[in-house]
Length: 425
Image 1 (cartoon, rainbow, N blue to C red):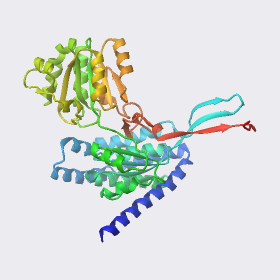
Image 2: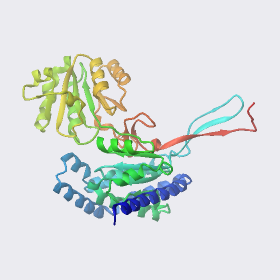
Image 3: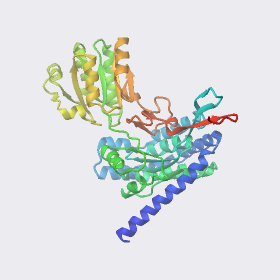
Image 4: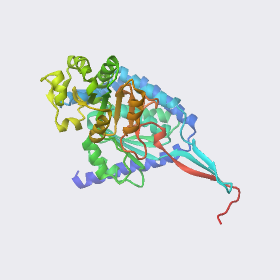
């Protein structure tokens, strides 16, 4: 097969998938909430029933990843064991149990001329999700899009190809068994990157593109796409330990934010400590060091913790390590901490540890990131943890959604106007 004919075949394949998705989206828009909930329950049951096959497919991907020297963070994101597969099914069930957002009246009012105006939630239509390494995205995105009445086209990374294929196949079969068109969930069946370029050009068939992965992937999608893109930039997450923070709480939150799962986007990357709380640094640092975390600090941090702390560079303040590395800076005020976050952060997730309610309110007001926590770990910046059931991504751009995105964030609103013969003068 020549390169030209191969490109034509790929273009035709992606175009056909998008056309089928558009038809499926029109069907889903009219599907009753009870039917969607039943389909989601069937999807969850199918994940449980096919756990052996999914785990076996994931084993193929894991072996290839290890042979290719994939980093520890990527391997962790890729891995599916029985507990994680059960978690996939549980997330789908949580989505099924949630109120259906489609048809919900977001707001309404009556005009002086008697017109009743309402904004009513409707599906977006067709959503393309382009992602790397994390096979859980396959089921999470499929469930959330279905709940919101959207068809979804999934294009996973080559490192999770077998896992994604197995999960998508299970979900499509479950939809067919539940009487819902399996074209509501489609997986692009090639690892050729050209498929991404073809997909994001289909502005007449696809309504939204959501890329999930590294900076290079997101940049490439944004540059190539004719379809609106909802971005998830890198997660440079901060914890600020205020001057009167509870010592035990501060140490516990910092450790959890960094160590509970270091290779994910809501893990702590930079620790900011008020100068009057700098005395807490040795107790905060000790368990991190025991766990193998490399510390990189400003001069005041190094003066307290010792010369084995590497000097932090400008690149460290910008870094999303996704690894056992933590940047540490001592600041003189809450305002300086907020300024650091504004300058070096990525609009993802920030937390303050404090016993001062006024400082907590000031931090929440001043920090404009998509998730801001008071006295809690950054690891809670997650759709499942915040009650969304699952998440299709964390938006760090403020249009059209911001922060963890569930089913409601996969809808838009239309105006419905009820009159009684009114005409405009």
